[in-house]
Length: 97
Image (cartoon, rainbow, N blue to C red; front, side, top):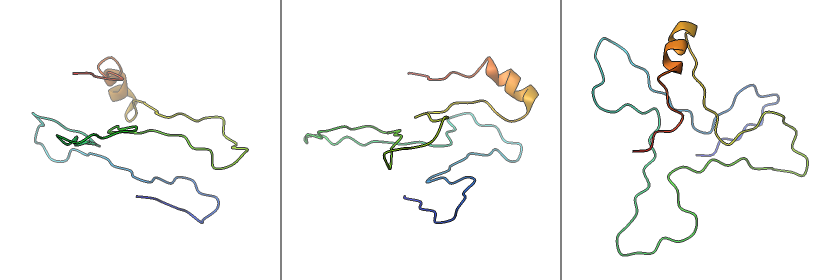
């Protein structure tokens, strides 16, 4: 998906914005992911070049980009301040299984 905006100025624009909300009273006992990217690797064929389930890229469209706050990946804990404080000690930046 490619998102182009001709509006100026733009406050927020997302190519893909996915979210996962929990409504009702049920519990999740398996997995819950706001985004899941699966890269299927075929058997019997060589897949060359750069291959990844996720590619995070900051791309300069011109010779003089102007921004002071750029990152390839941004991780934060947000929401209710008390709840965020609880999650702060329980949230891993990366989990490798």
